[in-house]
Image (cartoon, rainbow, N blue to C red; front, side, top):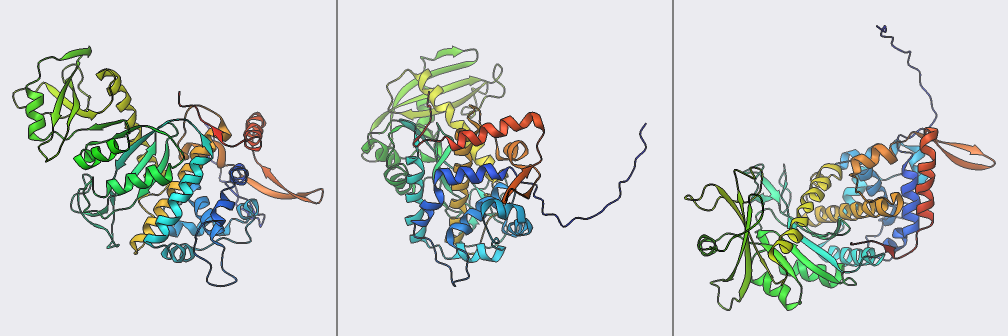
Length: 439
């Protein structure tokens, strides 16, 4: 038994930061050259000669997000952290109101001009080969009466106002290719054709798209025609409308691919005028053998099965196509991390386009962190921001004058110092475009 002893408390004026590991993120941003790219964009100008430059406001906003801020009021925390400001070369950091005013200067036209160009530049920095693009939508509940917040599909908080954004991910890199904010009462497929046009022509303008995957909200004749007009391969989940259910109910040639899972394919033509016959396939899971498998109960007289159906223009075997589609499930993990670790649900302003601007800057912050993991840590598995903070960034640090230079002192155990040195070397030795393997 050890007696509990309360240590005496004393105070020090010595500046110390809990985020000394952000020094490696600063080196990474310098190496990538994102600040120079920001300077070439049509960003709002400061209102006075004493105002913060746009590049610093954006970089400071990212820094707040990376160090746990999840709403604008949290962005005042780092204003008292003198060491962080020394690391990034800031004389001071913007306040909560500065961020609000800055994002309030973004309009629809400015958002459409800035972010596709920035995303295209970002993906030009990497070399990956043909990419898989995953389209998805999500629901962001709003507590107030912000512009665009409206009643719509909200499975978790029914009857509450929300926004209903569209997102596009690159499957091989787990990065965001494009993102739009939409009103909460918008249908899943609304504006999808325009969103896809911007994604393929601008955000991924220099990339070859090998495959497109999407959930059932994107199963419309217009979207399928749009993809076929671009000669793109696709796999899209199917909404089980009554005519689809009838086709599935009449299927006989089921093939068992593993215990409790059968597949079958069929040709279906939508009832819409001018619709084309397309290749569909369905996956049937026996609940008794696969109690946690996804899918829907479609038929009252067949309660032992759950079904999932898809449409595709690939000519591969059905099992291979289904396995290709299953990789899309990682989108949900990306969206969950954006909401929980990057504050995607909480950075909200009264003006709709200002909210979309902060929403899309968060996506860039997310992409930079994913690229940092690949280029700096040089490890196969992906960590969440929460894990990165505990392993890399949450390191006590202070500055010290040594040999007429200011030196950053990191409080790091000896056995971990070679690992930190290796990250710094990886960043300093970066060459562009950064190589990604999509094997």
